[in-house]
Image (cartoon, rainbow, N blue to C red; front, side, top):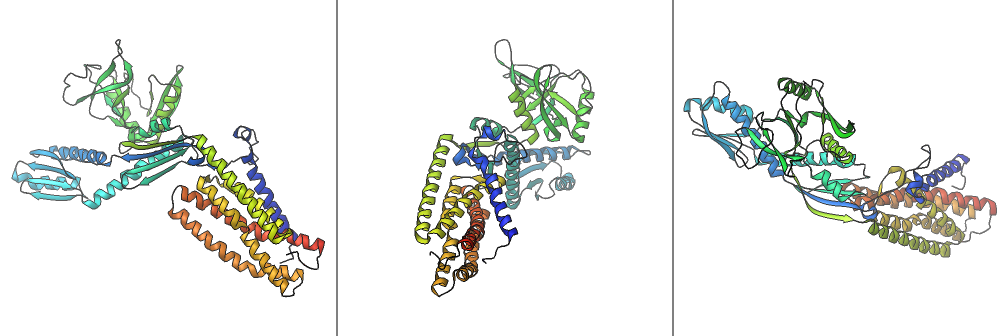
Length: 523
């Protein structure tokens, strides 16, 4: 153990130098980091919500609303199936709990109606009572649908929040119908604006006889009154449009959307997938000269007149956009529509001043812990303890470098993990030094005592650190948020402390031993 080859020494020095280089960006300001050449390490540790500040939102998903919309779509499908030639007479088509029901007027048509309903709801439970037919979801199907709706909402929220350029946002499921969003460094108001939009976009034709109207007047069948997002009349009253209910093209067929500029004004350009491009082309070809409404979340954001067929599958949404609002709309359209309305039921904003206090407290705890450990090691083991303290300082640098290159998020519990690592980092050195003491008392020479101390303590060191590492791994796998932050820093600290104790400290001890060649070790 006292014979260390040159390549091992070079390897250890290279790792230490790399750790110092990777950790160095953390001691300078972000503005100065931006001036560092791209070929040099410039990543800094990511600070979590409790250190950097940001937004904490607990959101409730209105899953029952989404389930009802699904049943309404099923109701439309049943109506279309029964009206398909040859038409089947029916009445009382409506929604019931977890399904739909309909009464067939002629007994001779019940068999054909049952066949058509079974074809629509293949996975649903079918029931026939006299002339009354029903399709219902089972409890297991409802649980599965609820879970899928919530997972889809989380996926879309992830896309939206990630496109904001935030560092390490956390979006997690909470229970059966809630989502927890934590976004370090985020503006809470902007985050709520982006998250709260359902962003369900559809394309409709306007009533050719009337494009704007009084919303209190009765509307013809098959139409609905929708408010314009930003248009007002001469009196400052919002403009309302008479929009045909039938959806010509759905936003589900959008392939992309980008903010751009047209005639010096911000607009949003969009393009469809092949299916949407074909539908959009056919609609514009058949309705040249007619007004066309682009509807987002039941509000008209633009109502241009179709000047000519648009066959390329691309279009422009114009309006009273600012550069920021155009960018936000493009983001919402790219990420897709939420399958369910969301309601923010809890909101907490963490200010940077609180995070700064936490960082200051963490630094103070780390410094006091480091001083206390250093004093104990020097008093207990003299010069050998001083070598362990040097390795401990290097261990902290390696932790900072690892957190920076891995872009792991440092939270307040993570700082607690680092403070714990300070104490654990010298544990391996204590085991080695105590073993060397015992070997020296039994009459071994300094070289023999050091060799036996390192070789015989190695198994104990590996066992102790491996069991703690397994505990950290389990905390990371089954924990969430702050618990994961603690587990990450603890696991990294265990790896770096073993490296510093078994390699760095040993190189210093062996170098001292070769130069001094003492007759007795100062332990």
